[in-house]
View 1 (cartoon, one colour):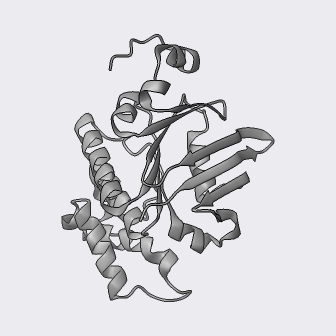
View 2: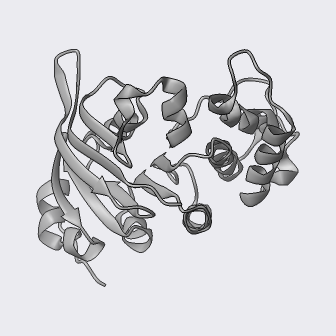
Length: 245
């Protein structure tokens, strides 16, 4: 089952600084939307606002349900955020970390049951890191950690998957592999994906549509061919490039 995400007049202001202003976006069910833009454009802020991690104004809806009317626990059942720099608890093994993704589905003060354990193990296996279950998470390589963090998000069983620079710490080979895994999960699970991606080539390769942010505002949306023009990149990235398709 696929899910639509819609934001209307979404904005974020922190310490009187406007980080995001008047963003209107609709992400179709099962679509992969890539957020692009220069550093400080508002990509991370937009993801954090949709996830409810930062206070925002405007409206954020999933299949017509206003997320701001939901409790944090209910919101986490609908939306999962994979941050660029995940917090890694010291001394925790990978399986226990992934099992934390089941927290939104548990009753208060309840412990994980056999069903939750099965979901966590399946998530690790789906990401190809089931063999790392007993490893201290702080000892994992960048590529291994990225997959374990994604497994935790999968264990959360969200409808919307938000990814903040999912390949930023990876080498070229691992970048390709991780994005292919995400694309496979999207198809298999019917996930709707919104990802901030720094590498424009990867964004063009994997995303159905792109949304270009600049100075906290949405300045362009469309297919990669429509958005990634030489003129657009020159204006918003201050870079002169040749775009070859």
